[in-house]
Image (cartoon, rainbow, N blue to C red):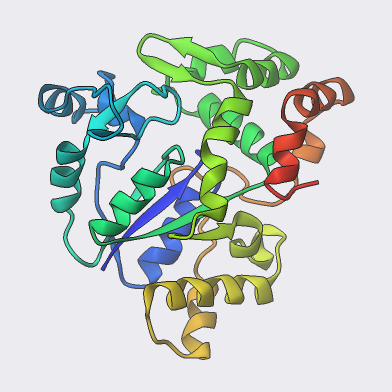
Length: 274
């Protein structure tokens, strides 16, 4: 069995990956994201993929995998060959836009899809904090050179630097939301997976782990479920900042929150966070 650990960036990708690790799966890299199609310094795979793909004009021949650039498609044969490299017992992280043909394609190639969502207000500030602390990331300088309100506006409006594109926040939310109701996908919430250590609830965490084991057809005891739950929260993870629920309440001022709600309020409600 192979698993797609899918999310909007900064929604709990590594939290879900940690859970999958604890179930005995290993991570395969590189992840399945739009970065595969772009020539950026952090992507040694991009040159390989660029030579072997041709952006198709018709969905009959290609599929979208780029959350930020909708026109970035890959041929189905390219994607099949890429996925076929991943051995059984492995998972791959992904930040994929929703597309029903893509969902069906992943399942047809032998993958179980799990999508984790998070309160978009927390997603926004987590993205800012991550870029601020990582000097090798493209928007590090920007987020460290402007005030908090400008940081928020940068994510809301979108940013571009070289070949790296951050789409407007509403576009990112809209492109990923379809995974929540996709029949091929197990949809989880960050707030349920994080547990008491992240200001969540241990009972909900146990239930989330059980949903994953059931989805993957893994038989396990309640004792094992609780043992896995107790090790999910990982402060040593590379992308860890605070890893807790509701940090947005300490970050937004009234004006910035109003700006966010004006452009994304309906989507935040659709994600189930109002």
